[in-house]
Image 1 (cartoon, helix red, strand yellow):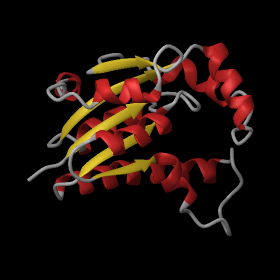
Image 2 (cartoon, rainbow, N blue to C red):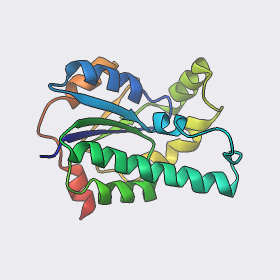
Image 3 (tube, rainbow, N blue to C red):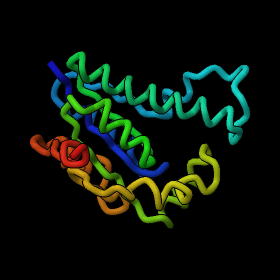
Image 4 (spheres, rainbow, N blue to C red):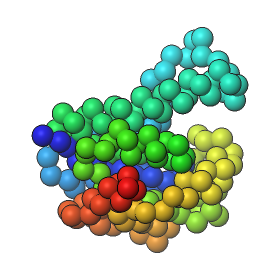
Length: 176
């Protein structure tokens, strides 16, 4: 028995967490919300190399690959999972491999750059320019099951659209 993965992909401050919170209230049965940031925050802080060094980058890559396998493991055990990610091309390739046997609804979460900058500044908990650095990379692959723009639709409206069944085809297309 496999679970269902709702895979939210978008830049920092695009609204993925807000959509996930709404999905948890909407979806039937138990779903786990597993954001990549939560996994990063589980890492020990002592003896972790400084951000931006090759040593840190290697640890970060292992962390992200482990996150993908956490998603796959939860789903393979029959659980519903909501993933919150900022994909790079090589991470998408890894996800396509490890989630190959799971039902995945792939959702592009969009927001215009000026609004992302405004949100990022208002949050105050992200490095300045993070969303802008991610902006040109995160959606470069295309091929979603559906896309939502959080500058136009509320998190609840996005979640209601995402929760509609029968949209899990993009990962299968991207694998081929």
